[in-house]
Image 1 (cartoon, rainbow, N blue to C red):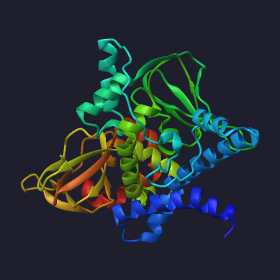
Image 2 (cartoon, helix red, strand yellow):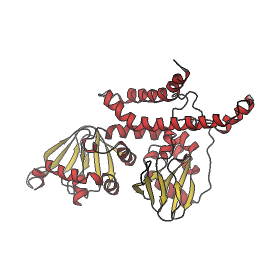
Image 3 (cartoon, helix red, strand yellow):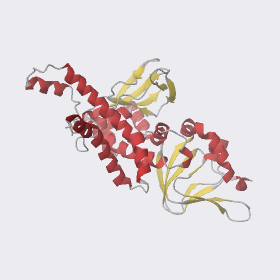
Image 4 (cartoon, one colour):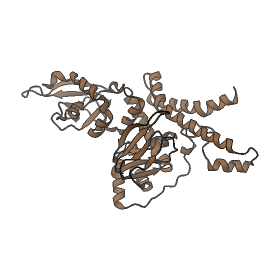
Length: 374
């Protein structure tokens, strides 16, 4: 095997396959081939982008150096540009040398009590920070900086390197992405409580989109070092778990992997015991649910003189709660856990924003409830 082939296997193929193998061992999917394809199309592609990006940077650095430089000069070159993926395996951080964990000293950025409280509130709304314990959460809050943006400011630019993620405190920002030879396409509008910029940190890849302030904004910024040591591992596990689950939800089959990843980022999770009411008939409905684990039944009062009757059975991958959201009406039925259940859910605003394109499908699917609606 030629040296070029060995380097390709070592620096590009092996890191992706090693992470795929770890993912399959952890999840143990029934359909290994399909699960592998879905993982490679999203997470694998992001890892590959980061590896190619690092390799390109390394090649540019090597080509610009003089072959007659001393070993000491070479050491200084790589010390100042720590980007060479010599052995990009699991132990050496498959996501790139930028993400390699080194000795970590938590940073503390001075902030007012009010700013700290606002950061806490915003972190509670972000999927990436929801599983941190109090100690780690305190480190993240201390490290965050308050960023003031003026209308028109470019916060991140597609293709650039990224060293920070951001959480929106005040204002709105436009997110767009462009392809070669085409105009940029609007992807979404970021609002208070939402975060962006994490992809470049998770996968050491260039910025995937451009984000511009639509008005004067206040952002909270977290640096790569703190993210790597405190947030990254939990965020990757959670994202992969939800992406795998959503890829098997029939409703979402028409969405591309990027759109499903946006839903994965917005999901929150809750557990229920046998007999618990997940939703109650007649209550106000402002949450849309996917059943991630377990089984549940829908019950409805069909005759006021009789107990509620079972009208529908839910299995893993099914969804419910859409009628109340789309019709802005009270819950049409109760949903009760038949076994220990885990649900993931979206609030009304996120449901409209992320699942808006599927509203026609959701409305058509009302027919499965029609005989119980009257």
